[in-house]
Image (tube, rainbow, N blue to C red; front, side):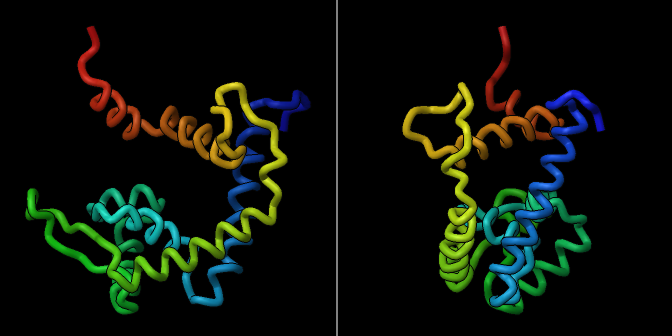
Length: 167
């Protein structure tokens, strides 16, 4: 590691360590319900009610397609998720939360949020780009999402497409 605070290696180390420790903490919260961190990521993505193609779920949950298929099979067996053929592109399969899945997600989300609140994230410094009245944890998430968008070529294309043609 560099002797210069804030060096790229420090950012990578800090983000990796924070992700691992937070995953461990939330894994303990979810363990009582036999929900893995990977399953939690899938439930959170599907909680928007839009239904998502399996390829998108795989990318967003950081799971290889084969592993995701096994995980989705387990969630289907627990009546938390169901799959349907995409009505627009019949070659694609979309995953959705069942009514039970939505209830379970909401219940677990409360427990996860309570666990994160115990960390005292509200005492963190707020970046210059933060909006007044926005909780510091939300600002941190927004900043990390922005960083992910800058690092992920697939997201860069999506954002460029959404912005429209440049003049």
